[in-house]
Length: 308
Image (cartoon, rainbow, N blue to C red; front, side, top):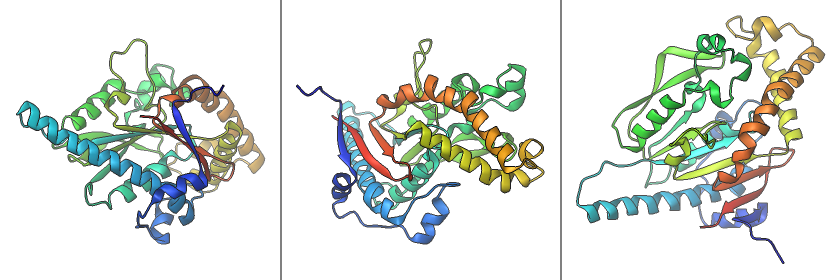
């Protein structure tokens, strides 16, 4: 007897067939701009995986817009436009940012939802000064390192249709919050919220970030692959961004040999990122409506879609 699964499972070819006639509205040059650091995504991957996904989300957005109109007619009270909110979760170095940027670009080219904004939860980390005071610098990315109240206030205001909502910005160069800068969200049709923590829950909280989501995605891969991608990315950063004297990591890693840098990256992965993955991120995978399962070459091999 086959055990029940809440997900429908598709291999690459089965999922690709669901594209139907969704047009490819992305050029090779645009794709190069959207790729993450050390991320490998081809235009064929966009056609096979992201166009069917874009079509699916489009159907959800249109249905939500129609339901909003019908509900407004029912209760006879004007309600502001409520943006469709997508959450994207997954481990460090798994490729969430590239997935988010691709979806933002592709979804913005549908007539029903031209305005698509993207916010990352990095901006809702506590500033380094606060983390240092609380002894949390080595737990950056863990749930306790985020200002969850501020994040909930932000997403609640967006969902309520406020005309202008600000989100704090984070610099990966200085590894800290930019105190005088903010991203401004102006009542979008779709908001994509990307971050390792967006599907996490707490026994002590009555409201979760994911309560505001209309659709959620978890980007998944074998831990050994993610670790390898993380170390490869670290080595590339050592040879590029870490060379900048303004970089938080300049004095720590820029002058290391390749072997020393590889050992440092492996240690950081083991002591921080792998622990966060097992304790806080991976347990949220089955809360997502859709899981993108990557293979060793970054290509998505299987797609799991939650049954309605």
